[in-house]
Amino acid sequence: MIQSSLTQMGAALRAKKISSVELTQNYLDRISTLNPALNAYITLNPEVSLEQARAADVRLAAGKTDALTGIPIAQKDIFCAKGWRTTCGSKMLHNFVSPYDAHVISQFNSAGAINLGKTNMDEFAMGSSNETSYYGTVKNPWDTARVPGGSSGGTAAAVAARLCAAATGTDTGGSIRQPAALCGISGLKPTYGVVSRYGMIAFASSLDQAGPMARSAEDLALLLNTMAGFDERDSTSLQRDKEDYARDLVKPLNGLRIGLPKEFFAEGLGSDVAQTVETSIGEYKKLGATIVDISLPNTKLSIPVYYVLAPAEASSNLSRFDGVRYGYRAPEYTDLADMYEKSRAQGFGAEVKRRIMIGTYVLSHGYYDAYYLQAQKIRRLIAQDFVEAFKQCDVIMGPTSPSTAFKLGEKGDDPVQMYLSDIYTIAVNLAGLPGMSIPCGFGANNMPVGLQIIGNYFDEARMLNVAHQFQLATDWHTRAPKL
Ligand code: GLN
Image (tube, rainbow, N blue to C red; front, side, top):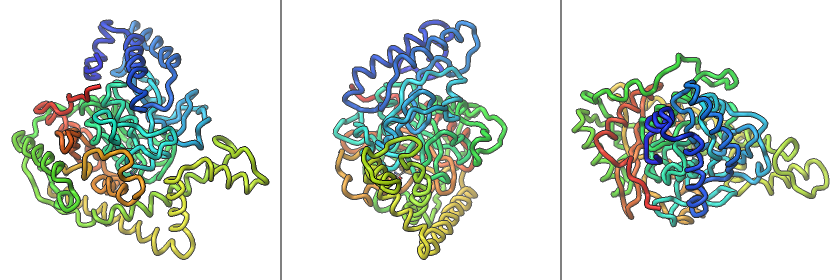
């Protein structure tokens, strides 16, 4: 059952071939056996999950079902879930039990899905390797000496190792797509504003977007159907008609125009990744697509722009963690200012502090115009590049990440090398576009390679169609690590 698609699982549950309690227990048992080596989960609550499963079974018996009723889904520990410890990978929130549900969580709850547990992540979603988590690094299930990517690395490892049916992630600069690529699974970052950010702990609000991570595009479509939708509690949530993201899955790809940006195939790209991605583009040609050479000339500026804007927003968002209302408070201090200082000094890890300092600096008087304002202007140019590109093609493709999964500790003391992991993903967030990654083969050391598919605004249904047709023609998405 753990290799079945969500559609097949749903059908088995409705046909009473398996109960949600049995399915949930199967996953919990698998987690007990395999999670100690992978560290994909921060918090498990078996009793709570099984209670939800019992309720789902009642609902299944009554025939009041949704596509996801009874299916165990893991949630990135950035989503507040009522009664669940929600840490965001930080010591700062080690004791925070959320009194409310994020919009994404309540959507899954109303669908009758099971919250299987909270997955590990880089602290406050800052990282590309899951090594900044206060709860320890996550291991890549394909090779436990390697990173799973980040920041949604716990989710990616859990999906790849079949420790959940599917899961959620968030993507501020690549955190759904890059770990999906490094763990050989599928992940989708929707258009900014499609999924509500309410109750999702904020990193950089103008970039953060939640999305599904699963084994196939078909599964992603079902999850997105549940996650997307207007929510008045998020001021950037978009009021749009409800969509069925699975509606175009079966369309043939004849005449599809695929844009290949020359900047995505230039210096810095590993030859193993380049070759694998080129082979999959060949597969698309066989499926009837035509290739268009395009250029995204400002791509090279996306990392410097992101590392001004994201830290600026983070420095403001993270000012709420002051040891007063919730979270970590230093045990000893002299006065209020000292309490703030010690609580933040002890509660945040090194990468988070680095971002807060950069952010505070670029927003300070005298530097605001030189850095922050300048970065905002370049952000607009980066978005404009995509507007031009989409005049010539329907989707853009390229590698998700310049290399396959690297060794634990390999980039730990070089933040710039780490930041370069997101060279192909960050521009998509800056432009607010949807992007996804699907497995497309294996590179050096037999580690998975991800193919990135970037769509125009609100083109998720088409991207899922493009990914699904590839997955009908190939079997990369069915490959699982031996555990
Ligand atoms: N790796 C990038 C960073 O460290 C992106 C993280 C993310 O998308 N949350 O900021």
